[in-house]
Amino acid sequence: MRSTPGFLGLIRLLALFTVLGFLVITVGPVVLGIVVAVLPFALVGFGIWLVFHTVRHGHEAVGARARDLGQALHEQAQRVVRTPARVCAGACNIARQTGYRVGRLVRAVVGILSPIVGGAVVGGFLGAAGGMHYHDMAVRIPAGMLIGALIGVAAGFLWRRAEPEAIVLERADKPAV
Image (cartoon, rainbow, N blue to C red; front, side):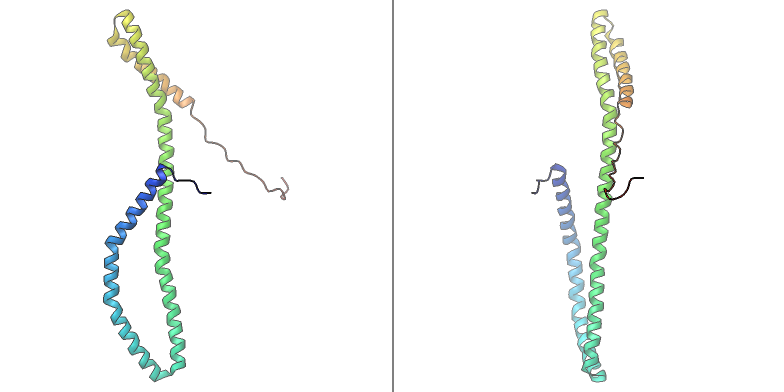
């Protein structure tokens, strides 16, 4: 059963389609132009080589040489395809790791900033209440916000969740040491 992708999954897919479309539109005509320009010369050269090699060495040697040439071209084509695939996989891995680290940083910052902002808001309200009673709101509101923010800083650092410990399960057939 497949689950539908979330919002970030859709954004990631949209980015992938955008990059692929850009590459096809910008690189495709260049590659196609090079292939169209080079292929006729390569085919004519192969035909001349085939005739020359057949006359000089016989058709058995030509078959073995053509088979070796085909295998070499196949290996080179695999390398040409495999290298960009590895580069794309590496880029995706780097993007995934960067997203994970940015997410951890954002969670840490929000985890510290939310108690600070909450403390400042509550302190400001308490300062406003005290300022209305004693008629010195200009002093009590900023002081209450500062004190609330400092309490929020302390709460943010004290209530931060520790990283969960990794649970390692031993195999049942291994004796415990």
